[in-house]
Image (cartoon, rainbow, N blue to C red; front, side, top):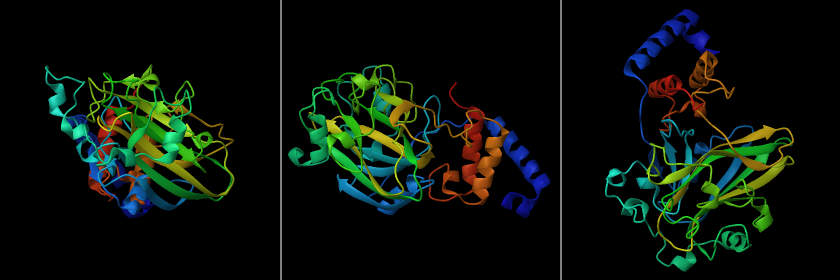
Length: 345
């Protein structure tokens, strides 16, 4: 391991202890999300942090500049998710905390312009055939008439061997809490086809992940990382797992869209496209992708530190904690802040 080869275990432990002391003295960091709008498909591919599979191509199927980007800094409890890509029905530039929403006189029925965008000049051209076809099936999306401002991203990937595939996401909307079930913005994911039966991301009732019914029991207004904080809301961290897929080429299409109107933005934060092994089983379940639990053991402890440092010295992409495209010393301090903060219980 380069950690040992480069500086030796004693020096490593001494430096680590010094870092811990500094981080402990400073206390946990409270950062807000940072977004970088981009139509660069190479940047979007890297930000998905693929593991166990090869992403062959990323294609923007629908949407305009501003609706696609990368994010970092979604690290302040109680809601966290590792760095990744963001798709929005509005402009991803302005998804950080908005002071106007904290004004005592703020009306959640009328969000500020930063999160209240019509992205396509001619709304009737802003949807996709597959989103409309899926939403038109009774029971899929509540009170569905049509979709608008759909951001759709196609990811083509190859599996070397049979495996299920999974990814993590958070869905958020300023439609909540005032316009739920009337303008039912939704997030859909199609696997190896665009027919309604190819949609694989579901809520607990078997419908698409959407404002309204999907928020029941899963919503939180306690997020402080984004513009979807109190009084607005998001659905806590979820993980979708596919059925077991054959080795070879496959396609995922991620789509988030306005429903029944073209304003009041919704967004989805996606990361960790990876193989899951086993038989899959399919489905979407609540989960916690906590940065502090770096080795995904379910507990935060010293092994997470060494797992992070091993990837940091190897310059692995998942060690880019601050999402600036480089694995550097600031990532160590950001990880330590997350480690001291711990994970939701």
